[in-house]
Image (cartoon, rainbow, N blue to C red):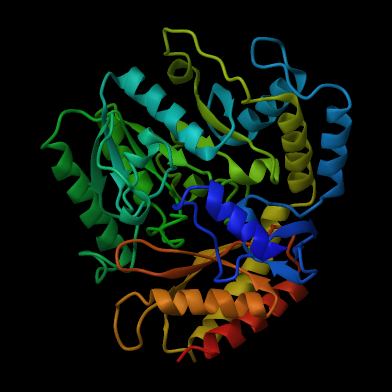
Length: 428
């Protein structure tokens, strides 16, 4: 049945719509941190639908909220007052850290980032945007134009002039050998020099931890230092929290809070985990920025009642059960366990991350050259052992991506680590 579905998939869907595994699987249902495929195989889920199932599969509080809302009304658009949308916007504004915050809901992180670009370029009257090397911000025409990752950038055409800045990758590039303080100073000097060669940009957009790029990040404080340079010139800071938001990094509720010395971002984008599988994205911005548009705009499906009900229930559960704290505690144990394993595996160049956002970079032993075959082999071996993980990377890098639901238990972390150990040790 799965092979028949695979054939049908290839017959009607784009060739570039990638599937994991040589023999792709159909996931039919899930519960907690586990999912099952169409053949009845059970897997421990360490990827959560690309960091989207943030709390747990089939979380009763969320499924109940969705079911009850579906029995009333699914959708009415933003042309009518919408109580669940207002209630979730109030909660998001409250936890955002942005003063006088306004919230606009979309259906995805891609659309959220496109909206942030619209706001920033309109507010600043500039179509020049600063972005980070190795970054990923979505698959729309505008978002691809600010994506600094060749593997996810199918065209050089763009409505924006994008200039790429150093700093998103700590252990590669021209400043990798510097200590953290000197690394930050060098990146700030590069940014300052770059700004002397171009017309004033609208904004810098940055992921606090680069997701698709392999869970790479700069030293804490880099974006605070950037912020000082940007603020002097009126340039906005957009923090792309699509993958880092809602406590996933453990130490902070938002990824930008690791860089908070110079205050919060002007704009924050979010998506993925807030809906626990429902399609929610959004933008948070100061009122003067959010309200700068002088033409009509609506969102047909952004903020629809059923997704807002899911988001409210999910955010409430996350806060009441301190899943951020759980990500810090269990994630810390998992990172240390993986580092002890990696010390015995020549293919592992680095285990990095924070909370339940962990990357394992693989290279050919004795070199810094990416080993994409090894990453694929570990992905397959982990699946055979009953574990689902992801992969990513950028320029000449290859990394495994580990991002379980934030309710992961210590026992499940140990189980997943044991499966990964076997998969990594199987490399030749």
